[in-house]
Length: 82
Picture 1 (cartoon, rainbow, N blue to C red):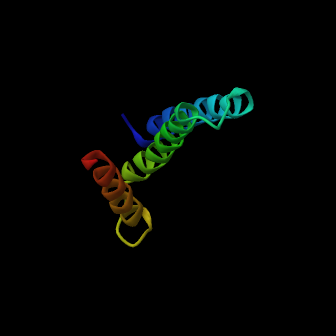
Picture 2: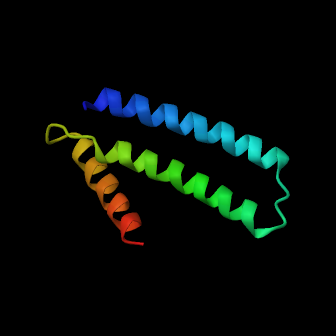
């Protein structure tokens, strides 16, 4: 899968998760633990999708792409450890 397909798929997923997040914020009672955990799971998934996209960047030296790739891979690795 190339970078453009990965960006498109992750962006589509982020948009869907954002819609779910907005809908949940409107209709949930945020006083109990379950909606808070659900929102944290949604936001963590969005966060991981953004850094997954960064981890897919490969490019020529002298650009910011290797830095984005390293940061994205590092963050994904740290989150997978937990």
